[in-house]
Amino acid sequence: MATRDRPSTVTPVTLRLRRTFAAPRERVFRAWTVPEEMKQWKAPGDMTTPVAEVDLRPGGRYRIHMQAPDGAVTHRLVGVYRLVDPPKKLVYTWRWEDEPESGETLVTVEFLDRGASTELVLTHELFPNDEASRKHEAGWTACFDKLARVVQVR
Image 1 (tube, one colour):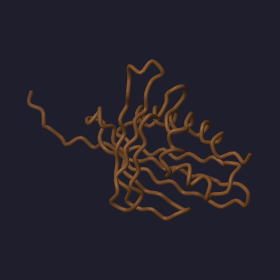
Image 2 (cartoon, helix red, strand yellow):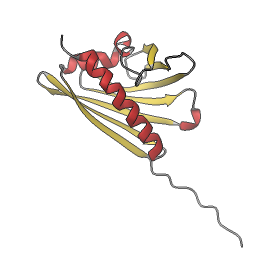
Image 3 (tube, one colour):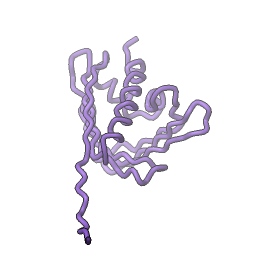
Image 4 (cartoon, one colour):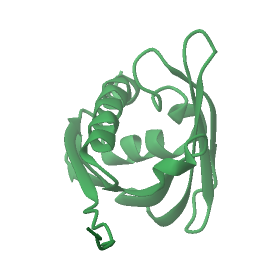
């Protein structure tokens, strides 16, 4: 019996996270865009960020390396800024350089002024499946825990 090939229809998965940080949005935006500050929080858990390079303008590129504590594993993340609207919004592409098969996704970060605090709304979209979205949700959540410590007013 013959079968027909049908084009697969994959519905991209979107992840949306909200978190309020006890810092003004200018401070949170700076932590999100200044390489020396990004190195303090831009890798989940006990991973570190030995490389953070930023060309903060539409069309500008960024590069982030996330490294395991033993130094054996490094995940390389690259992308291009599509929108830079300080201190309100960032839109950029996201691609794992060492996993080209995972494709490119899109990140939108909104920094909402809540007086002495900032509500951050992160939308990470175009995941190929729920599993990829869940992995990134865990990573972002762990990074946000570090970010909260970086931006806290001392």
